[in-house]
Length: 229
Image 1: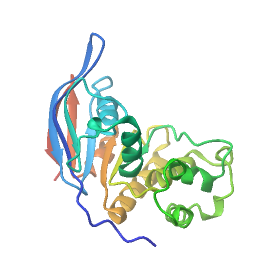
Image 2: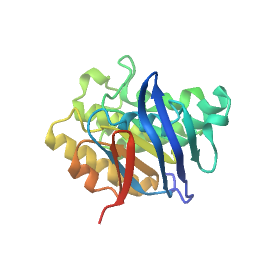
Image 3: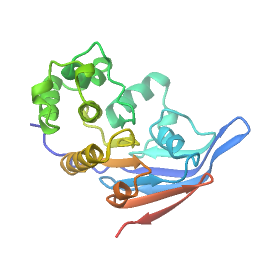
Image 4: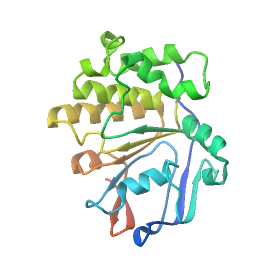
């Protein structure tokens, strides 16, 4: 089994703005998080939560401002370099699991390792992650044979396969019933403690948000950062 991470990644956002044509979604946002913390991003619908997550995750480029991850501005990298950097450093969990229906559970977890050969023992790690999320008995099943909670557990294992420094979750419990949502939230924090990554969760679930160490609230494209007691 791999050893828990000992490095300390950092995320720094300075004077970040993002527009879609005439619509300004994010306005002059600045914050910083040290490595290994858990962060909740909340706010009303349309406040820019998912957009901010996509910019931090390097899926979208800001119109102005700067993002640094591990003291690197990823948007200064070439497209091939950025793709490789994102694959190695950032894991994503979305509200929809986005599993490939033709692949087995084990194969879906391994998908992020196909583009860039990050580690020689990827299959062993995939099996171990699936054991942690309680799906050892489902390795050969297809997504269509799984429950919603099981599919989301596969998505979490897939997001962690490359041992990312940062795990970004966009409404990871939003499509689940309350009992399953609580189970998935427990799993996220258990794995966060083991992996020692930086966990950032966009959520409308205030109970989930209260479990995070830091709380970033977005309103009308601007933000405030608070520490949960």
